Image (cartoon, rainbow, N blue to C red):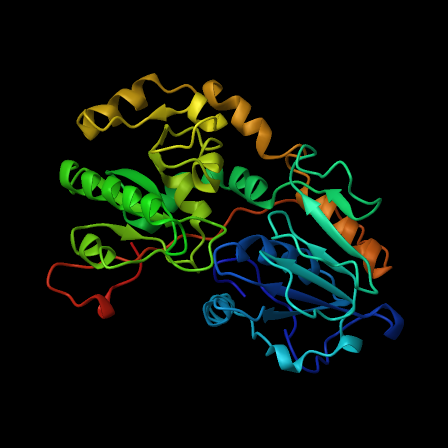
Length: 379
């Protein structure tokens, strides 16, 4: 698999695998369950850790729910062959790793819920369930021993590892020589006021920024069930908006961006790692990012605000936000692998895992006069 995850699977992802190494008692199957396309990136990061061990077989499945079809498309684009939920059997799985939500009636193997997973009642499960967190301040103080572990943040680590490839990502997006304005676009499932406000910001950017000097790129907000959309999106694409689809790696677009705009959330929070100016739009009162970042003013021209933010921006101003992302910077792979092998009851490989740069991004665009169903992909 060399698609959006940037690594190659050495064995089959499902069915019998004659190349499965190791003694019979050391072989394990790791099931990765993804509940939504955009938050599925960390799940694929975890699959990388298991995919390097020939004793482990990695299988994928989409959690039952409204996003299952979109998740299956994302997994197939990534080179995996997702299993149907009805095909899973308890005895065939040694470990379950889930992202975004814990599926109903998961296999009865030990389960790891990745950071950001929606809480669920798991007291009835016979096998251990471990909730993981990015920061020690996120860990519930009343968590049972062994049931809550701070592992770090894979988005943070892979984004930091990708920073040296900024020029490469910009060429992949086709924005060399232009300013790239990345805008967080809430999904269709968010509140109508937030969504309309974000679309108004995008319209304003497209109206005021010359397309020969700037590219406006919308990023779907991680953590959402559905792709951003609505009746206004097609017109914005025809007006020059670029859109990162859910199956593309949005983290590379953050590295490539010259400015990052949006309400406080995963996109703007992780954007503070890149050194690019972060401008918040319509933040809720009391958000830490609102106190550190620049506020996009409604009564002033956008272009002058972008120029002013670029001239005056100092990464130190958002240091409190950066430090709150994770209390284990650079250690997600190491901590997660230790947790996985402990639950699998296997010795770890004699290597030190490190975060890899993310895969090159691609975007959706639409030329004037083209129907939206024929939108081209790429830079």
